Image (cartoon, rainbow, N blue to C red):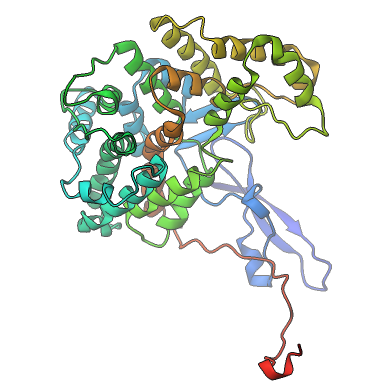
Length: 433
């Protein structure tokens, strides 16, 4: 980042003003470098870090006001329509689009890391049969640390690269097996002849008794979903991966920590909430009453799938997901799906209603993704699992970038203490009744 000017902070404490550099990246809002404040006995206070840049990154850029999402400079729309998830994963990890040979080599590396160690089966069997797939996903991913001791050397570039390949390759197998374990079906092993999304759908739906033929349009739809969720700058789960990784922890533990953060309903569970809302609306005729409830400040009801903490314009991923929803339902002859009709009418009304326009409550990526995933035969308990599967590519890219950053330091946020001042210990006999 380039320092091109400074701001002066006068604390009115009899001390000279503090000069703080203003730093500009290649895109986006300039940031004020506040590190010098510590030398003067001060820290900034920013709950949730909503006004604090925790790192410098060249991976993903978001402009919420303009509705832009770039990966390494490439608009998400172009990547979703023109690329595939393996190419996007390569781009996130290495910084450039691959040549034809580089893509072949990368896909082969991922493909041949897809199988899980045979003893991982024992790890799965340690969970209750009815365990939530995300609980299993987190536990098994973290347990991989014990199978790959070479991954502990996180400051070796080749070790990091192999770990990144292993994670991107093995997470689909873990995800599919978490589902199979939950429903009591035998595990299905990955097929090296299949592409990434196709392979996942096969592991999810095939059985030893009967092969599962993956329709190309469905595999492409899932691949596009993976692209749309591959990375999203310094969100809660990505920040968790970086914070865990800043201590030098094994990458499997770091990604498991990111998964745990993603599992929270305020982060990764939004598409499941949208589907539940559509089920509760039940019929298009009930939409006017739902819209009125959404506008009523005294009503705790929220219209799920509209608005975004970052995007104050149309979520660019939502436009792609809307078209993908059309493609999938058309391919499966489900265009009369009642929930899809409810979603379409909700979107139409919200985009024309002055209340939603004024508050910039546009449909986000979660609004249609639940409908698509359900059409692919994926239950709602697996929605966050698929989010984690896709986001693993971004997590390992962010983790790798952090460890190669010359400014890398172990994460150590400060606090404003609001507890009691110093007091002396009182023996039990003197504490009263």
